[in-house]
Each structure stands twice: as structure tokens, then as C-alpha cells.
Image 1 (tube, helix red, strand yellow):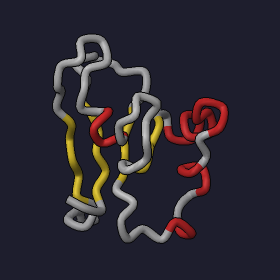
Image 2: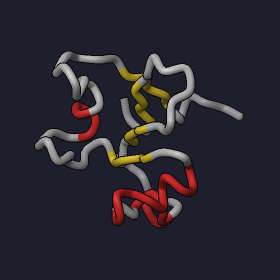
Image 3: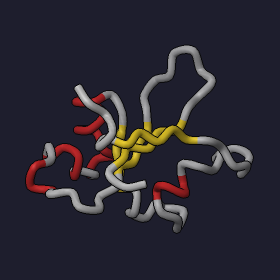
Image 4: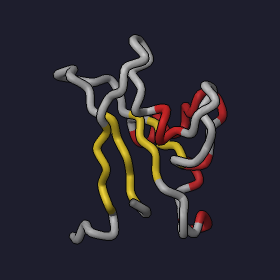
Amino acid sequence: MSHGVYRFVTAREIPGDFDACWDPVGVDVSGLDPVLLDFSNKRAAQKAKYGGELFPSSSWAATGTVFLDFFQIDKATGDPKGIVAIDLQEVSL
């Protein structure tokens, strides 16, 4: 799937934030909010503006895997976990 936003789902009733990754293929980054490309200070600007963090899906996480794969592993257990994919080309307003 391309041009999507991928989010993992938590069982918490009221999560404190969210983590997501987006497919950069075909994206004109000049049209993005610059905050989405600011990873400084533990992504503080993203958290302040959007309430969570958004990563390019093909960028590398500290674990040595791309974020799309990183978000599919439970960090506490190492078990696989599901994510939600939203194809933004299919979403109409």
C-alpha cells in the first residue's frame, strides 16, 4: 500500500499520545508541514502540535528496522502486533 498512514492500536482507554508512520513514496515534501520533518528534541514540536509522533515509514528506527516494521513489534514482549493502515487516496471528504 502506498500513500497511507499506518497507526498501531492500543488497548488503553485513554492513550497519552499516538505513534504513526506515513509512506513517503510520491510525496512532495515541500507541501508538508515542516513540523512533520522535525525530529529534534525527541519530536517535541510534533507532539505539541499534533499530540503524537509521525515518522516516514521507510526511515530507520533506533532498533535498526524501518518504522513500518518497528511499529508491528510489541516492545515489551517482542511479539508481533497489529497496525491500522489508512489509504489516504481512498479517503474522500
